[in-house]
Image (cartoon, rainbow, N blue to C red; front, top):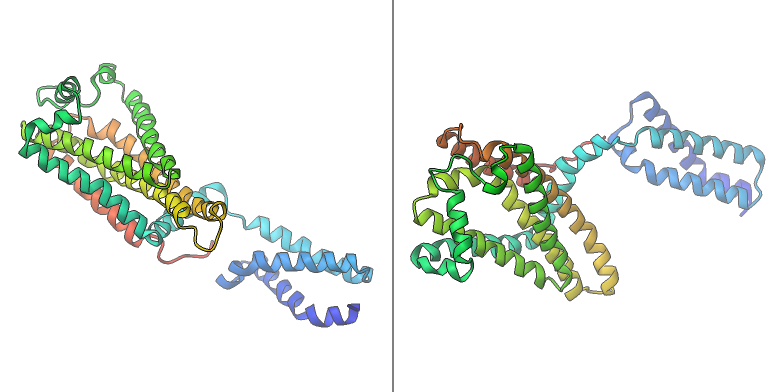
Length: 325
């Protein structure tokens, strides 16, 4: 293609890009300018490469290099810093992905909360049922943890240190380990994630039903309500992330299993990122709030219910309107 024809075809593109650069430099850019800037910048870089390859005039190459340089300055100037990217992930990307993947979330929630509720009811109706899931020694240990006469709540072996930061670290390691186990096992065609969702739901439900039946509900429920809103929701997220991987392997559609798994992993990693943030917050609440005996039970229950409501509102409504950076 001759240079004159090339310039005629692309002249309007270069002018439009130059105006966008000027608008960005002055801080007057519109939302659509920002959203399309990366694509326009790549197009100008391609035009510069073509001009060099075809041996066009030095004047044209110099003009295009100037445009590319200006675009480069604006492109990296407007790159969001780490904190802004994190906030964008929390406020927009993660809750939006949760809503887009509502089917996986729904299946995960039914498996986990369904088994939890079922076992909580059955354990109250059939007291000995808990011993089919948990050994008598473990049941006795759990009872001692939530005995109303116990001054400190939580794992007693660690609580004797009376160091909340020790508990914070313990909860992080334990909960994130469970979440990753639930997530990674989804590679077994989703069966692993389904198993761990059911296992954890049945296990926690049995404990809840048993402690409520023997009259320890006044210590158990105020303890778990606060951090449970974040922790239990995170387990569902991890399960959904694993189920997403499993679905890609079972039904890859028109793609190969490798390609389908690669596409699904992007979504799953977003879900796991949100789950980890939830678990970090849950560990903090569990260590510094849930285990405290100086806070009235009524306040703990009120705050716990409020946290469940906030989590629901966040997942349903956050990120529905995307703002320009």
